[in-house]
Length: 273
Image (cartoon, rainbow, N blue to C red; front, side, top):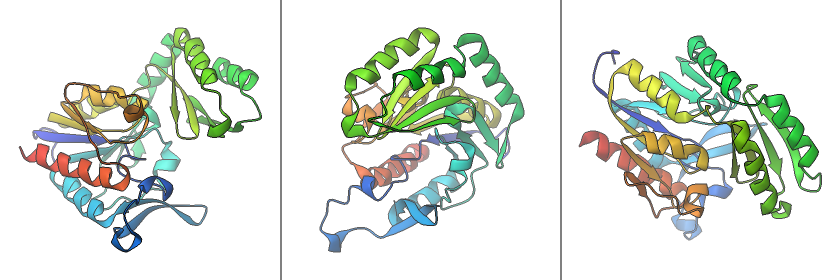
């Protein structure tokens, strides 16, 4: 598609929105009625992420009829492990908006803009990491990681994690220009200017998109959903748990892999309208 053609841009989160681990697929039906699955990610020589075959066919249609932009908090390396069905997306958004990939290569101009804004508006990553190191309890902390030198996250034993700790971290990080999000076993500390929505707007500008559609399940997707013309969130995840809603965002009832299918059906219906 030429950069001057009117287009519908579909910006969708991946994990627990379009692709699912075995545990998050939520296959609650009798085993004999479970859908056939397509593995879309292998890690450590083992299958890690899946879509139903129905979702795979729907995504192929979405990627053929719209400008489909995978939009993820994953690093570039983590994103490249995923092999989605359908034509390879020309654009992808990684590191929560820190990188826009164009034909698989990070756009350096965008990268510099993001880095400059973070440096101007936020406390340095070293300060955030130092605070995490001194306040996290080894009793529930499993790993501490840095993603793309842009943000930090902890992998925790969720059952032992005190809720108050996450709230205290968010209260401490906010005045320093950072946001905190708890997703499954991961606690993210992300600079406030590092957003999926900013990257989506940039891709939309480049392709001349006339309409934007989005989907996501976590608090890190809230800005993306708010920035799109229409959005959908599944019946599971951080947003659903908090009862998060917006006038133009549909709160679906479906959970797990069934939600992935329904989101893709809604993308197709909306792009054809």
